[in-house]
Length: 294
Image (cartoon, rainbow, N blue to C red; front, side, top):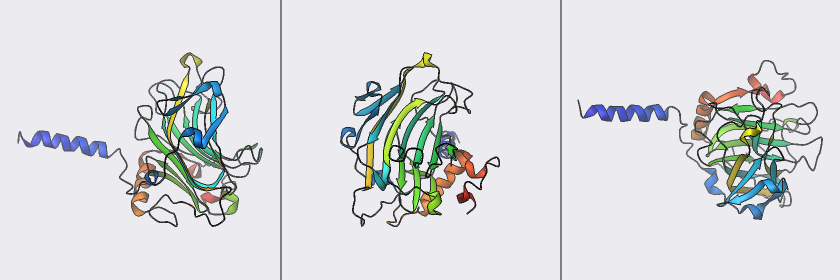
């Protein structure tokens, strides 16, 4: 009995840890796309004095003077877009660290956008990862968001983790360390982004809404707020590719979609990590988001 007790305790600890970690998706799309040097695929967009390369990682930061952002050199009409990101620990309320697709500069006031945003937090509370999709101006003026929010199953301040967006003509898939956390299918042209977009990253002050609907603001006693990015990936059909350019897939199937194991992993995330789904929000006007019931 004395021999089996330590073994039993180890197995119990492993089982408890496994209960809070998603099952393997069985397919790892990040391994299918080559990483690129930041300066070959991107350029500074704003806040150049708040951006530097540090041990092959790009650091961008926010202080009371400015934030910073970067943008891909080329626009894309589909593809796999990812980066490994490490967030700042401690008090980061009001601060947004983002990696996203957008055509805001090409279509101001009537743009498309696909977001991965980390909403800053207060001491002792987890970051919220927010995914969002805007279509043809739904992020301009009267905003119609399509937010799904998650509390991750790991601490994103303790190391780099890979976050990615797979955008094809059929679907948008959001991934964290190759685990799909959200699939947004194309149910109609009216509810899906179809125009070319660029890849962006940024850190900025969104105190009016980012943390608990604006309850907690950015506190510059804790500046600078730093986001670190590395392992950049941007692969797919650019806006200049020939018509026959084939969209990439996030699954073993060239036609797209998710495998059974990927769906199982995503189901785990929705059961254990999802904290908000716009389609389940009874306060929302779902006539504006027909994909929720279509």
